[in-house]
Length: 268
Image (cartoon, rainbow, N blue to C red; front, top):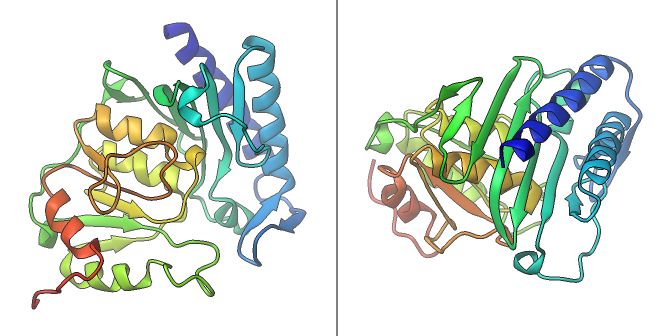
């Protein structure tokens, strides 16, 4: 497993160097599901670098990547070895020169993530975890934060690309939570939000419309740092789930109550 970790860290750093070389340049932007769901030549170049490295080192492993996404015929928990790759998370930020973006890759064995890394090239921060071995940032072990009340908490979230047309677009949930916390953040990079919960920089995070490559490393980081990961209504979380609530554990029930369908909002 240490060999897998070393490979993942080295490969993420290579992708990070490539992205830094292309950063602040003019980008060729293409649009996917909407005008705010974008992909650049940097996403594709990073994706190709990561895919080539994985295929060369682990030719019998499957790959599920945001930009090279394929319709896997098997269920995620039936694939012996599956790499989940986000070659550039925070593309809108990246394309605008906003410095919140990262690279993430994780190895799942029959649906359970066993190793994951998230790399922030601009800050040279490598977040990593091996199941059962803790969560780390640049050699320093991470632990989730201490606050036990939402009024003392810094919480993050995100919104789906189709938020203008999607009924379940997280706006109602955001409005319920925002007045009841010390602060809210919407940074635009799920992989970094999750890493920040693991490192105690955020106290909780939820999102309602993401894909397995967005969650894979981050949820392992939070779990290994002592936090709690569930669906937003308390369901047991899995890679196939499209939503998640992660927290330091102490805030989980209070936050989950605000996200529950048909919730009754108590007075401020």
